[in-house]
Image (tube, one colour):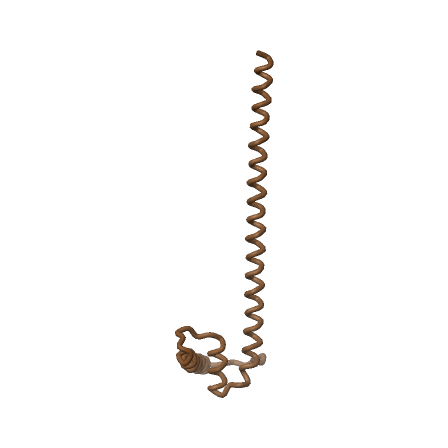
Length: 121
């Protein structure tokens, strides 16, 4: 909204109710497309088809763009999680190897001490 515009509580309430009705109507139309496809879950294609059926074609292109941006972000997050998991696994393996090497070094030192004691005896 432009600066200096005031909205009454009644107007806010009316806009809120209108938005709720729009979302319910869009969901109902999208649900019809899902049922035609013998599915219970709505998907993005159902919503886009509902927008066209409701004669809101001008929203289809921006919605597709937003959906693509969202999917790219999700892929990026998923890849970041995989990289983090791989790094964590690699670090755990490195720690495990270090611990094994330390244990082996301790055993070798003990054996050397035992050998020295046997030689002294």
